Length: 285
Image (cartoon, rainbow, N blue to C red; front, side, top):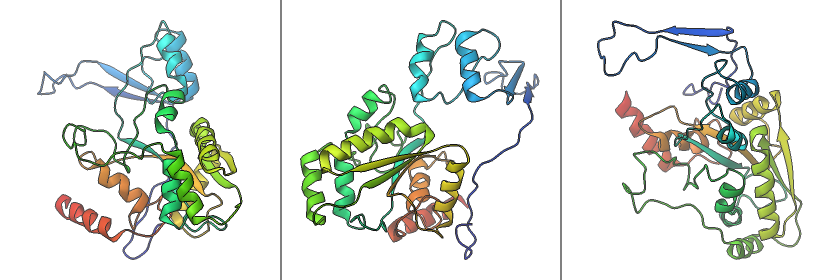
């Protein structure tokens, strides 16, 4: 539960599935251009993502397609004689949720939060950790046909990498040494967390501690953030979020992080956003 009046909830995904799900084509489907092009598709839930990737890279016929290949495994797929890597622009963003109420750090101040953003070398992160398979974002707007730069050339741009400006802003809101900044990351983003920590240490001359969540810890952290009943044990939480609304992904992404019903919101509600989101809901209803 996020709030009771009006009722708002979020689903923290946990599923029990049968070993295999078999989909059979409808040969009488009216639109022959669209298909069907396959007689049958079998989704295998009896192998882990790691096992599935190993099978698609090293064998033929056991597994034909694996979706959502981790960025750290992309090179392995490309080098495989059995597999081919296909990339698409996902409606998904990796973001750092900032705990504005953190004790001992001035994260309530917008200058401090700007300093954190300016201190991160996004281009280097994308090149070195993601192998070039990611894009820097302005806010939480994923690259889609509706948000492409050629459609909106004057749209917001991502923060530049400016360590000197970041250091000046940080010193502006701090008074002498402070405690270490704590970054917590979901297990998939461990390498990202350490790279960001290094950038922050270099730019802000600030000690940074990284902790990584695994298994059930990840679901617990998401649930605690959604409930907003206990103070976070982190200063920045790295997690990803995808949009379920295909027609308005930027608005849906921002709802999760800044909306009144946002499951990942760690700061105040933004009234201007609430007005925009209410207008979208009214149009969809």
